[in-house]
Length: 290
Image (cartoon, rainbow, N blue to C red; front, side, top):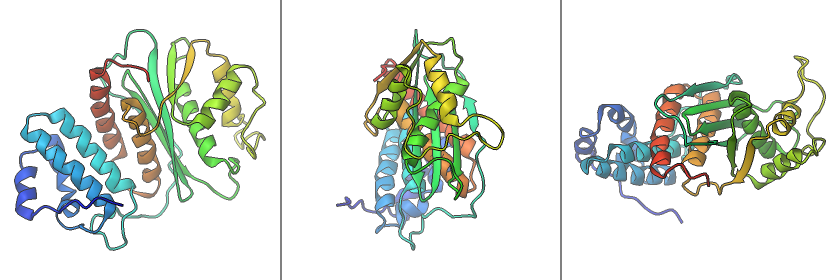
């Protein structure tokens, strides 16, 4: 049962919103309908609760926590199932191809001493997929696409997407770096560990192993080579949606990547703000791997 969260009056929202730091003021202003009107929408109810907590954090001088809370509220507003008549429902423009990855690095982070820690994740919904990764040194990346009738993925789309997220990360992180990889999919972890043991012929059911149109090897075949060829790679399981900062970041990036396939918004700025916020939380915990 969804917990009812009362809406705010217009005056209550405006008074609280005017206290927000400049970087958050515009973002919270876009939640006005969620805060004051969408009483019957479960997604908006969760986002409204997070928004109230964010307003309270600002009143107590905790801007970092407010950033995390507002980011999570945006995640629910953009990713949740809104009723058709919800005033906060995101627009649904025509589908466009966003296969090209978006990647970057938030400056000012060096990661924990020793091995680099990173997390990957995938998001799949209504034939559209997004994958993402985040590392403790500020590096991040995401990619989204739609599944067409000739897609080589096969029936295990979620599993293959989880593995492709790992490939996107390993393409970015240099081979000589010791790496602790956090994965919240036990199925994906079983394949990665099997490949580490040398069982590189094991592939998800139905995955098409024919060379791609470009002549390149399939992405999972390339991934097996990367996994086998990285002696400094350590694979760890982390429970999804348990509050682990890097896992939550990768999950949110995957959702942004999936949404940017069908929506028009500044996904890069959204990703960078999210990574920055969660890295503050990650480093406050001392960078514990799992």
